[in-house]
Every structure is written in C-alpha cells, then in structure tokens.
Length: 349
Image (cartoon, rainbow, N blue to C red; front, side):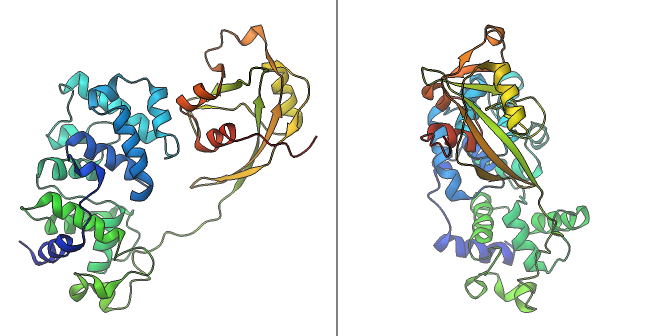
C-alpha cells in the first residue's frame, strides 16, 4: 500500500467517521442517495434529510415508483432540486434497464442521470469495495494542498492532474475505508479555512504546509458581485384557509416545484391576483431575502385573505388550492414552505 493511503487509513482508524447512517447498512442505494445529497451540502445538514428519505422510500424500486411531488417534498430544504429529479429518473431507468438495482459496471453506472465519474466511483468503492478513485470537493482540497497544485480545481487541466493523483493514491485494499477517510480529512483537519495541519497525518509531505500555502490553495475562483432581484409573492387564501399554489415551468429557478404566484410589483400583483381569484383586500407581510449561489432574491409577500376561486382555473393542472396538510406533502421551495407553514403576520393594515 502506498504511503499516502497507509497514513490516511491509520488516522481513519482512530478519528474517521464510522457511524454515518448510510454506512449501516452500506448498500449501493444508500451510498448513492448520500452521495447525491452531499453534493454542495454538509454532512450535518444531510443526515436528517437522509433518514427521512430512506424511511419513506427505503429501496430503489420504491423511489422509482414514487410520484415526483413526493420525491421533491422529501428533498425540500436541500436545494438544487435538479439533483432530486436526476435521482428519481435514474431510479426509474434502473428498474427499466437493470433489474431494479444500480449497475456494478462503471460505464453503465456513470451513464445514469446525475451520476458522474466521482459519484460512480464512490458508489462502487463504498458499496462494493471496488478500486475506483473519487474526486469530490473535499478530496480536491486535500490533493491540491498535498501536491501544491495551483489553479482553480474546476479548470479542466487542473482537474485532470487531480484525477491522476486520486487514481495513484487509491489503494487496492480497504477501499471503502480509504474513500471515507480522504473525505473525512477534507471535511475536518483539511478544512477550507484554518486547517489543523499539525494534527494532519499527511503534513510531513504536504507541499502547502511546507511552503506556507494553505491559505492560497486551493486557488480561489475569481470573485464577482452577486446581483439582487425582487419579486412579489401572492398568498391567495380562501375562507377555508387553503392557499392557491402554482406549479412553476420547466425552466429557471425552482423549475417544476409548486410555489406561490409571483408578480414584478404591486400593480402587477393586483392584476395577477384578480386573474386567479376573486379578491377583496391585500396585506403586506414581512419581506425577506433568499440567497442563491448566483443571486439574491428579495421577496415581498402579499396576503389576499378570503379569496375565492374563479371557475376558469378549476381545470388548470398548474394551479391548485391546498390546505396545510397538502402543502406539507408537496415539493415546495424551502422559503415558500417556511412562509406558508408559519403564522402569517401582517405588517400593514
């Protein structure tokens, strides 16, 4: 076994995470689900979502058979909903083409929606003990610092070099432990800021530690200002306490999720509300800001109480009146769900 892997595994035996819910049992379905959830999301955030998801849909065939709204409802709050749709679609393909299981062949596995090279490698390594390297964000940070590699890790030339190192370091034995170990190291001692180099098992041969470059590596992406957008969200609530929801289109943010009708300003809000329902008065609620990775959204909620449905929208499949129980079971964006399930306090008469 190479010295890099030996040192990392010795550290893992004493300090690695061995009680994560997807490790018991560590089957392909649970590993796959955890890997997809962990993309751009931290372990502590993922754990309760993972537990809720596998309790509701404990097997791949059950995921494949589930309604998309149920899948999105279970995912709501994790963000990046495209991941959930790919997960659902991949499960359906596995039922149709692979006997209801994730294939053990790398090419077949990586051809499924949402499963790239690193995710496929993680599934095969952790669930089946097969020797495949991984290269998620934590692993990139460890390898970038250890080898002193400059340039942003997403650049194709840099990523190519990182894959070469990932392949070279992956041992032929204890592959599941090694895969977990290098991810754990990147998430703990080799964290993005304030890495604990003195406690790191790889510090002796780490270029970034030796040359004082831990703050400079990995190379940061060129920063750019995040724009701000504004919207008015319409809460049309009838006398039964039901709220009118609208399914968003296939493009743009929150695509395909159930959400609130939106308008660009107050005048547009009134026109939109009158088109959707019979209304009387409106009340402004507390505004809030939701931050996406690429922009900030300033939301002004506007409550129309005692609204009633127009007959014209009764047969519209993209509109539905929902009570609190139905809202909880639908795939809604997290800020919209929080807004609707919280007491709606008015800020103006």
